[in-house]
Amino acid sequence: MTSQLPQASTAPHETNPLLIDAEADDEQVQQSLPVLKRPWLLLLGLVLVALNLRPALSSMSPLLGEVSSSLGLSAAKAGLLTTLPVLCLGLFAPLAPLLARRFGSERVVSGILLTLAGGIILRSTLGEFGLFAGSLVAGASIGIIGVLLPGIVKRDFAKQAGAMTGVYTMALCLGAAIAAGATVPLSHYFGDSWSVGLGFWMIPALLAMVFWLPQARNGHGAHHVAYRVRGLLRDPLAWQVTLYMGLQSSLAYIVFGWLPSILISRGLSPTEAGLVMSGSIIVQLTSALTAPWLATRGKDQRLAILIVMLLTTGGLFGCLLAPLDGLWGWAILLGLGQGGTFSLALTLIVLRSRDAHVAANLSSMAQGFGYTLASLGPLAVGIVHDQTRGWNAVGWIFAIIGLAAIIFGWGAGRAQYVHVTAEKV
Image 1 (cartoon, rainbow, N blue to C red):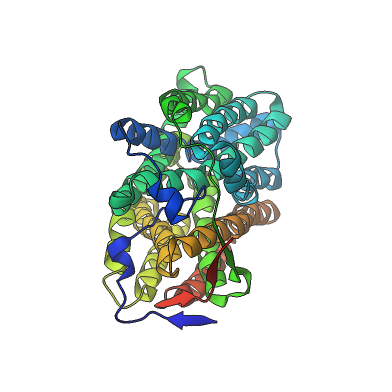
Image 2 (image 1 turned 90 degrees about the horizontal axis):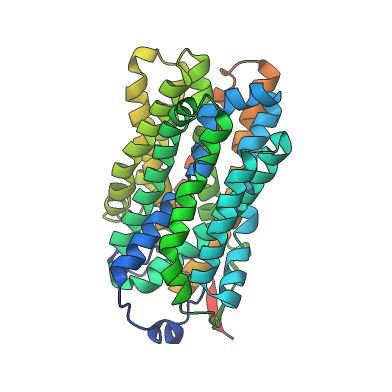
């Protein structure tokens, strides 16, 4: 059951609390937090940490063929390799609030940056076992930090939540783009070693941890959460938001995992394929910033969701089937679509919630279930490619996921609230 947005209420985009605190969403707790003495240092640390939330995912795909040949991986195993980190994003996301309440968000982020660096090192050593074990550790680490980092931003930069959402999203996209474009050249520079190319990304993770240490030492500590939200799992609108989040994410991680392999099969070199994906991700910066602003200017977000999903699926089909002469145009189209789909998914979490307590729980639901669902996309691509020994049949996966995302996004885009309540405990 859902309820219509009251016409006289404050428009959701005026407050725009897009970044949800997983540690403590009680007003009294928020008001008791001290004023930041060096916000610039926190901002620098946040940007550096956010830059590390995608390289472990996007650095693998340009080298996937080389890694598979070196270790004798089948296409199905390669598909599992691209699926495992994304699956961990969803499975380990619920751990983030539990760890934050016990140790404090800042300390958890610092510790998990170490496990992220360890996972990156592990997957570049110890052969096939290390590759899969390291991917699991890295994915779990990203899943935990990905829940906590937005909450820290929302708490400490509450008055600049909208601007900081843009900074956070830009850092995510930039980290993914740099890793996609630089991993193959790095591996060639260091003696054509794919293990060095993959392992290099432990360095920015450790660097981010160094800059984050002041926050870990001076963090706010653990807090008591004073509200409990009931009924989300029985709410149709909450599931529509969650399914849209998961389905659009599935297409994004198919791009991270398989787009370079598709382009290499069409005649591009691994370096060229990585650069195309990197360029497409950089383009996401534009629509990631503008799509939510434009979408909140209308009566609802249905048209915006339809447009960005059509751009995304059109770009995917262009990269898969269209002549290579126009490849960069299709890559730009894909980037514009995917930047908008991701930022709109974040926006919907807030716009469909009556208050920050509901939004915090809806965010956890959308990320936990959504990213678990998203992991099936890269796995399906690997299986279909393994069975057909080609890529054309993968277009059916693009079409099915894209259509389903439009259907659930159309429902999630209605100007309604999820019908749940926040109860004080």
